[in-house]
Image 1 (cartoon, rainbow, N blue to C red):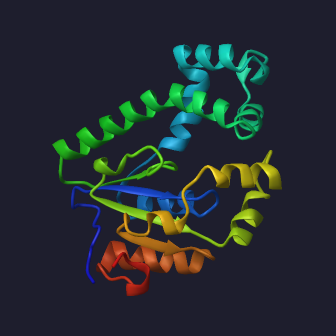
Image 2 (image 1 turned 180 degrees about the horizontal axis):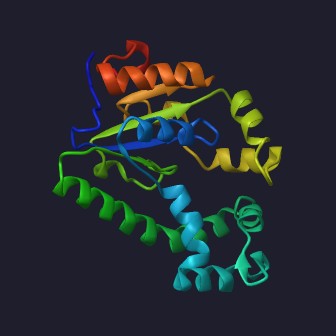
Length: 210
């Protein structure tokens, strides 16, 4: 099956997957290959303390996460991942900003079809964002591997990892919705499959939606 994703094809490509499945590494590969790249996860981290309106809303709702006048993402994460109501409240605050940013990127690429963009978006299906993408790539790894990677991150522990994972869709829930399904147990094979997609339009059939 051929489904080439060249940097000059003017596609908007969604890159999603579970926690520690390799999204940031894959995004870096696309950037090196000439694609425009965006991370909505990084965008949210940035605006939490830079957007006055959003910061004020979060501080009012979650005053315990404020340290020296700034929002501690670590403390905020511990709060919301332990309480689904709090998580829903935070998402309700953030979603308008991520949706606006996604629409800005989508409109920019569609006005100039000469260059493709890859957007890392953790909750693509959970927030029903499929309509913005020409192609969708989903990365997944074994729970053991994702846990091992996650525990190397700052302020991460087993409980928080499984709380985050519980709020994300799994492979079985998205398999018929994605164009490329990549099992990423090590970066060697991740690089191999991404190279096949980008440069040759070829991909091992067992990893493609069918």
